[in-house]
Length: 406
Length: 201
Image (tube, rainbow over all chains, first blue to last red; front, top):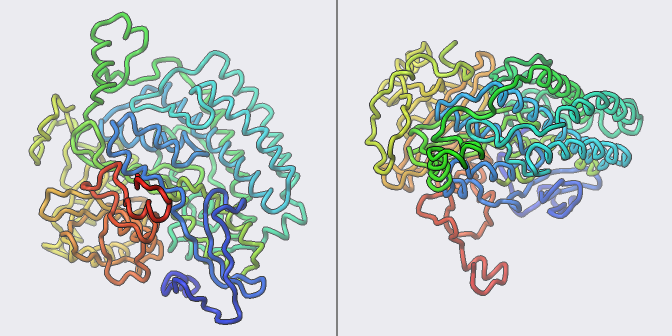
């Protein structure tokens, strides 16, 4: 075990470790750079950080408990609220887990739309990360540009799901509804101009001297430490852990897509920036592939007892009406068993552990949240660095407090 | 190793509807045909059985995911051995509460071998109040995950360096994810005292 990570061993709860030399600074929970309600108890010696103790739980809403009181399909809106910048990724992880328990296959069109929207979600999430991260460090313009493009993605969310943020668009067995008319044209237009926009962000930052001084060599974490702390996602890949669930344990059709997994070895803020920027380009490529491959056909699996019938059928056929009534009022039963489904969310491995007891409500739903694990790294990253770099470190690991606290 | 990869959908047997081992839940009309866990007898399972004997209660595979059920006392040893065999990544730690069972708490450890690209779940049952060996000496990441399990279920880990609540307030009473804890239940005294709400709700 690396000695640098002694951090977690003996944790003094109240007292400082530096005696009279140090002072304790309370950062958050209402600090803008903490991207939510994260409280950091920072012990500083002058400008140098001696120790950081994160205090989490301010956004704990008991989602895991609430899930146990809901029907399987009612859990989907809860999953949006975990990682609220990547709702589709969470929807996907949950529905894949339940579909696995049910042994349900979704039709190809649904699969491709899911892939397309999952990658669009990654782009939108990375745009928020880039904008806020850059603004934390002082680059205001990037924020405005990023949110301009993110707005386009939110518009597309609204087109498909009727909601800008809490989409709940994926359903067990398929999708809630088909793509609206004009959506693909809108998306095509987006994919045409977005590559140039990525280069625009890159021009503003990649070789910007101020950006480089603020990010290069800052908040480093080695590969060994990253393994110990079970970091995942871009944060781990920037430290040289070559691991991406989309490629290594493909789920939901990712085996049909071609993409590269960007990797860096420096493990600093700049490396994490470079990895995510490349992910933006790769994700855009995947969106294009999904658009090119998008077949016609149904968007829901043929499972009348699980998937809600079309509106049309429900109004004209007695049987569909009965199924509709039964699913809405009683839910559907899921065979007894348990499954763990991990997906590569924009932040890392988002895993759903679903236990079924054979009834219509899950017995237990546990989320393995990427931000929860990645936040562990904040201490080892920042200790010994300057206080101002804490802000850069928080931005670079891209945490979402809804995901940390659930 | 084909039996380890999650990517292969439903390997082998699941087409044959198998009799459920446990008595089916009473009010479950027309449960869909369900795949049953199949014994997992890959080389790794055989190796572990040889090494630990009776400590391995069951080694099985369900929906292409391998799991081991071990006795509560041997969990730490088995996980340590698995780490030495290449499962160097700890993906998750959680628990499930079965209040009607004699050993009501089921701990679940999900381990991951990046080199061989396989996952394994280790599960063990514990009695109320029984201490679970902490994994913090093996993985630093276990620290927060075990704190969460303690917070939510009240399972106490022995040799944990900092076993405090992590998500709930420190002075809260009760452990929310236990099945006997209601969905709208609150620590009314805490709410009254800290939030100044007279009704406590």
